[in-house]
Structure formats: C-alpha cells, structure tokens
Image 1 (spheres, rainbow, N blue to C red):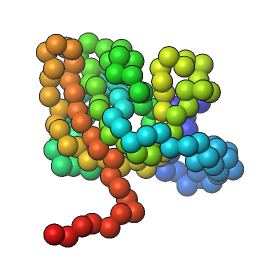
Image 2 (tube, rainbow, N blue to C red):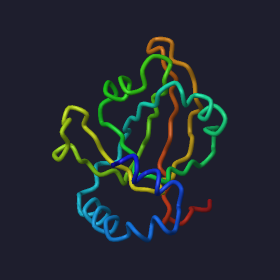
Image 3 (cartoon, rainbow, N blue to C red):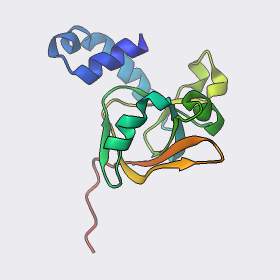
Length: 151
C-alpha cells in the first residue's frame, strides 16, 4: 500500500490525488501530530540497481526533491542492510523527520518518515567506501521557509 501511495504522489495525477484526498488528509494530519525527531543524521539504504540514477542526478550542490513519503532509519546498520553490497547508503541530515518506531511491526529498524516533497541539497557527492563495499552520499534538508542571511 505504501508503494501505491508513493507512486500516486510521484505521478501527481490530479484524478488519483482528488480521489484519495480524504485518506491523505488524515494520514498527513496524523503524521504532523507526531513530535518532530531531533535534527540529526539519518540513513537510507538504496539497492545498487539505482546507482545510475544517483550518479547522474545527485551531484554536488544540487537540490533533490522526493515526492513520496520517504522512510529513513536512525540505524546505519539497518540502512546498510537495505542497501546491500554495492548499494548506496544515503546520509540525510533532517529536521522534519517523524519517528514511527512505536507503531512499526519492525521496531528494530528505528524507522522515521519524511513528508512528501522533501527537499535536500547534496553536500557530499556519491563516493565509494571500500570498508563497507557500498557507495555513500550526504544530503542536508533544505529549509524552505527561512530567509537567507546576507553578509
């Protein structure tokens, strides 16, 4: 079900979005009512099949936009397992994550959710870490409602 919701959010089909507006209203309202997790680094494991997309689009300084609900973990070990050998460990510094561990069937995953339309800047490009036999990438969540400081 989670995959279907994300596909619908990514495609932005007005008919599908309109038909699920009531469900999405309650889902996002429930998530917004959860306290924000502390600002810190979280982790997401991506299988190596997506490596080409990451090499092409996740370049230094680029802002990336994730349209769907995105799951991250507080545990680097869990994310590394999801990535697998040759996969990608994404390090995400986020300040809007919501912890759902207490409601998860897999509490050991220390799962948190990022809302749809999450935006982050690539602050360290994709690089291979020999000791882990995985690629790594560092993102920092973009603050959308903060004015810039001019010095």
